[in-house]
Length: 254
Length: 328
Image (cartoon, rainbow over all chains, first blue to last red; front, side):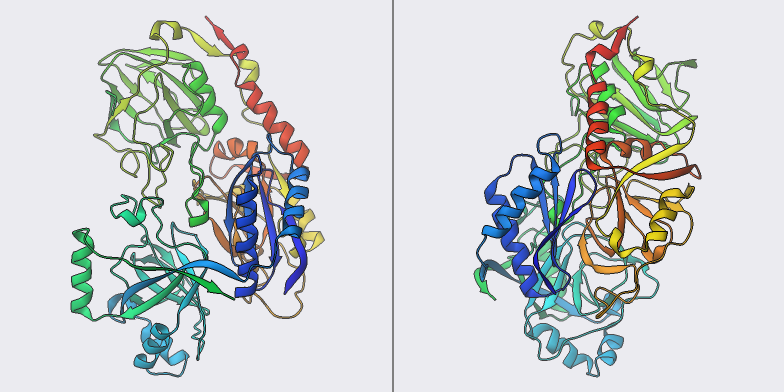
């Protein structure tokens, strides 16, 4: 559900958690994004940074500049003032994926769990557009939700997380798709691999100039299925820093 | 990279360059990082008349051995690693002249767990996203995004003052952190303490916990009694275990309790989000205390209010002041 009014919760003495609700929905996510924009525009003295998420936001502040209760009352008045956000700027990013194979070894299992063939699974996963509702855990890792699924793909997560997941792995856990930006442990079913970096600590491409993370909350992702040969070609282009990222600036309405 | 000043002969077990951290990238999952014991780094910089946020070397559990390539002045702060220069013991919280050819050697931590080697002018590595701090998961900052290792040559920036003005400076004993005794980590309850049974909150605040050996800059684990969650009504959002919630952002210092067992308190390299109930958060100033916990050391959690946390932080920041430096 979405609460009548946001809940302001202490997260220690230099962070606040602002909860909009407890549901993982586009509606809750839009409210968080709207609040995040309003807080950024308000430029409250002492606010250091915000971390908007599915249904809540973490805000870090300097308690020596602004006292917690004063901050909460400012945030309350902002949250009461903001109009309902129905449209936001949202980039559409296309990412090539090689489904199955060594680093998509759970594709068969994931398809079985959804009572579809592997081919149909790939069709469903590439036809739908995915919404980024939160970014993080590892640097630049997005959590993606199918936007208009004719079938919602759902799988259980690993019972015991694996120690190694290569960068670029596309994972499905519950109904969320994640992309692993750096090698890390992981618990999502591995369904494929993208040759395109979504985190680049060297900031080698222009697109990473502002941030080493490609994807942001409120962006959308479309996956396209590539075969081994296309995968290798793209990987070569990335290596030579002449891969052309496919990014469209659009707006998205609820 | 500034003047080549140190060559690493022994690297220790987890040695990295840290300043006071980077801000502004938490929204994409890049945590602040930075020195885990901030009082120690600031004090080292104050001794050397560096800006307080200047970068130093953080060692963990076992110190390093360095060859000095250029005359300079250093200060060792934080834990006691039995440091010697060419075999002669040198004190912590004190400026030390080192000369070309000297060997600085540190042993295992005798007291505390993290030590800082600060140097006049600061360790010179590139600023990455606004900070020199090493963040290993993202391979950012420090020496090429990694730990310091044997063979590295570390550069140092220009000192702010003539080196001879740093002679004999030391921190007054009365302002140094207490070592030994019963350790209390102060926390503010929340954001999800309302998911935990009241009896379990009392257990959390009254039990003795043991610092797990599985503790690092990402998170500290503590071994203690099982905690229990309130019954949940309706849909089990976020997962079937009662310790699950719909993912939200993690504060640095947030204490997660996956499955109600082994609270994990996030350190400066903590993960930015997760789907576990966070019963409480460590107060900012006590990150310094957690940084110095020895593995298997016993601690207790103590609940404080936000104003209490703020005065404790103010008090700690005020201690880093020239009035607390004396000259021998």
